[in-house]
Length: 155
Image (cartoon, rainbow, N blue to C red; front, side, top):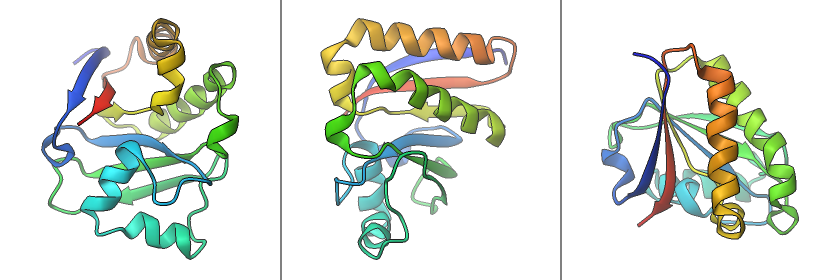
């Protein structure tokens, strides 16, 4: 398999989505987490929320949490990346955050990744976000056997 970048318009049931690794972000000011992290949290019986409440998980910038998922999921793991304060997130600083995500994906050495980024980023600049993701992924993985799903929205 060669590098492949696929835009997934939406997934209804994350537990049925076939991927090796979910990658998403968490924010220090969003408890419980939202988006893909929120859906994973819900399916894990609020494990992420409980750990955020107890201070084990903070959501601060650059925090990385790798979670083994239970048999309810077709995916084996989820990588949560702390993005800090959601109110300070902007398209201008997202490139650095996406590069950090891709660094971690590369280190994990997986064949299939499903990536979900905060909706507020690509709501304001959808074409720029898609172009940025494709460019960074292509530069990083163009010769590697990896399939990257960009999950645009969740139901």
